Image 1 (cartoon, rainbow, N blue to C red):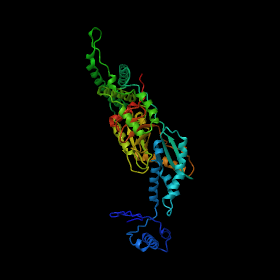
Image 2: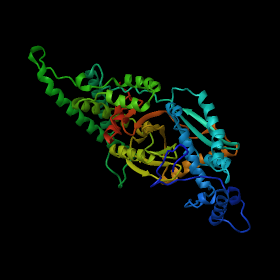
Image 3: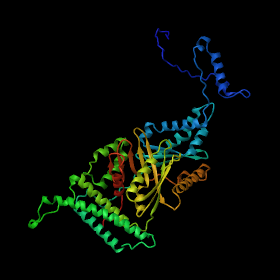
Image 4: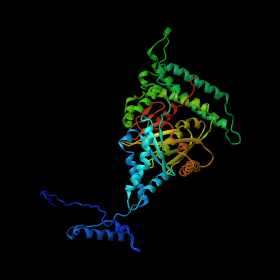
Length: 496
């Protein structure tokens, strides 16, 4: 093809696609019983033949009619439009996560669905019913905090709720393996072990009667098992101390025991101070992905001796918590709700939690489904389960490169004796009933029965995991043992 200025373009091995609205009016107005693909093709073909000169029309190889978009296709278009909106640089920098209830999406599609006007009407509906109200809500929210924007059905169309995400409070863990005086820590831990052992011995379980085990016996055996684990770790630490004894002599030539652990071996910034600075730095960070990677690379890891002492501290904290847990529930229902309909890490988190609590010795039943509402869950049972599982309640946020947040809401309730699936369905129904009332104006968005909790942990898909309560991080998704350390570090126990 040569243009008027003598420039030639070679069109070999080329497909040229031309779009036009020729014949659209005729195809939209069916005559009699004629309808469907053949009628539209005939209408477009005749309109193009009447408009173009014969020498040009004869060079067109194929005329392809575009059918009107169905409601299902419009919903897919709406998903795509929403995703592009919330991938805008401004919203990514604000760390905004979007959650659209399925019934709210139907309202948006209803407002923008027009068989003749296509997706343009839908985009206008999204801009007016969603983008503008969200922008107004965000202008009122704190710019330094990540947020979850939830879209609900409403009598006037849709309603939005913006939840700024506050981080969980730093935990004052009493047995600090990075303490200035590890010997004092050693003494305190020995006192805890001695006290728990004395209490355990005084309530020694009797024999099993008629093939049943009483709650008191279950508690006794669980504490005894954890006590044995702690004593084994104590023996390891003692062996390390003996190996250091050759480094000094005391008065009269007596050998001086080696230190519990040296500061060089610990390699950790003091846990509680680190957590406090983590909160400040996280809110000020411009790119959360880079910040998490920086945290993971900057935090040195303890050497083997310090790791044993760390586990000794953590398992002792769990021992005392277990000893004091007799009056607490022994069955916990864990429900994980994903906020994003595009991708959810809920199944992944449930599997990791199942592995963690099985490692801790609990009975675990898990329920994972592919339902669009993204609800999954666990039923965890055993002595001491409640104080541990409760520590995981809140927001677990997953991050993908160059994308916004994927938060998961983890809710913990006392489990009944009903099957796990039935308990999860009951939880889902409570929230679905509230959404139905909201859609008819009989409830408000401020009455959300399952609002976002506090931020507990960030999981970077290609990088580190950061625990916001303790300031600790792992170089990748935590292993079961690393997850156990993060969990036990959040225990609030007495150091008296």
